[in-house]
Length: 499
Ligand SMILES: CC(=O)N[C@H]1[C@@H](OP(=O)(O)OP(=O)(O)OC[C@H]2O[C@@H](n3ccc(=O)[nH]c3=O)[C@H](O)[C@@H]2O)O[C@H](CO)[C@@H](O)[C@@H]1O[C@H](C)C(=O)N[C@@H](C)C(=O)N[C@H](CCC(=O)O)C(=O)O
Ligand SMILES: Nc1ncnc2c1ncn2[C@@H]1O[C@H](COP(=O)(O)OP(=O)(O)OP(=O)(O)O)[C@@H](O)[C@H]1O
Ligand SMILES: N[C@H](CCC[C@H](N)C(=O)O)C(=O)O
Ligand SMILES: [Mg+2]
Image 1: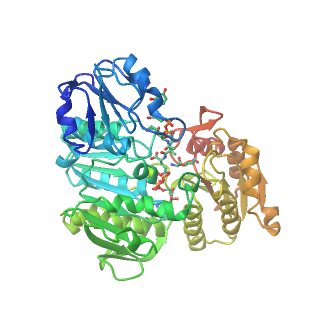
Image 2: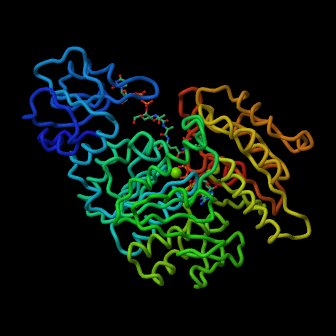
């Protein structure tokens, strides 16, 4: 996100990276920052970042040809040009975050910025906090997988955590808009790629860690370290709020400078919850010994609500006011969203795209199913797939969980991206024990799978459509086709699509 009207002295930017080696004039003004040579214009500071597909250093000549005034890089080109300033650093992604903060006037220092990390629950917690603080009367911003948002204004996004240039530009915009609080997701990719470098957080929240993204991080240990990297960089005045029921909760905050606080459903913690009862309509629980009725359901949401409550209290809010508003909060888009058919079939559209999330959601449903029992035991029919060009190890695991916790399963496509849908399905099928084969139907066409599942459901049954939640597209071979699980369910139920 470039801002053409902005000008800042190069010297001011260099203050943010004192260890840099500079070759050439420092008496220059910079109009924009860019890590993409294709977006460089006259007066741009081009940042060469080594990537996963290519190396930004290869595009330095192109950036200079397009008018780059300065180049930030890890390795100086063999030949330097007199009219260009070269800034050499050890880690250009890290330096990019630091100078991006300087370029945009260090917005995070003037905003109460809270980051949420963990395998599952980031969008849920960040969105709940955003909605809670707005209700408490603050102007707020949100940076999430579903969308970025500044008060009512929706700003579309492509990532869970934007790159540091986009992120700092968004924060500046939110600051100018008068936002006092911003809640954001911190993905593990973002930590490793230094997208959060240069941010001053008021608090960090850890939800949980389970299997995901091992295609990128390679080992679970690296994945844990990536998440921990967020807590390692929290300042002393910030809080670090961790789910102590997750066995990695304490690891996250080892040697953390911030004030450590905990939440739990099982043990002593700063914020302790206890679930009493839940139905398809809500959950009754104690939060630090206060009885509350929430609209959200599921044990995982009890954790999310504790994280939200804890963060709000740590940010100085009144407990009664927080609980009274939290009680009425609804889930983030595509998270456990229910659609009831005229024939009394309940479909649940949920973004569960990891083994852990799928298990949590199906266990919640199993619990509700028992609670709703009538003469005929309600059945749970699951429609699920796994994304292409993403962690393949989770595929058989998700199929196994779906079979274990459902009466019938439709294995289908998620976003195949550049992979063959049938190959993904074959890998999922490897997780199905032979005695469960009779439960399983393999249908690569997601629309058809949703239709079949909804058609086969009897009154009282529950259809879970998992994996895509809020997404309004299906990505096949690089093309994003319109596709919305909720609209598909409505159509299958013979209801108006946008009702
Ligand atoms: C694996 C990954 O995270 N990749 C991100 C990364 O791209 P990359 O390292 O592959 O970049 P590259 O294509 O090798 O290019 C290297 C550098 O050369 C530059 N370049 C390239 C070509 C050119 O002509 N000129 C030029 O200057 C590029 O701008 C870049 O700076 O940096 C890009 C710019 O910031 C990101 O858009 C890109 O996200 C890709 C699209 C992606 O799919 N990321 C996913 C995996 C991701 O980040 N997901 C997490 C959420 C995960 C979760 O929580 O579930 C997220 O936070 O969204
Ligand atoms: N605290 C939680 N623990 C475990 N599972 C959860 C939790 N909260 C939500 N889930 C489940 O995980 C799914 C994803 O939740 P959410 O979108 O909040 O996670 P996320 O961490 O933002 O995911 P992503 O990494 O894709 O951005 C939900 O649809 C739900 O099934
Ligand atoms: N943030 C996650 C989302 C996965 C959602 C699922 N629908 C898929 O496409 O695999 C990712 O990019 O890996
Ligand atoms: Mg998310």
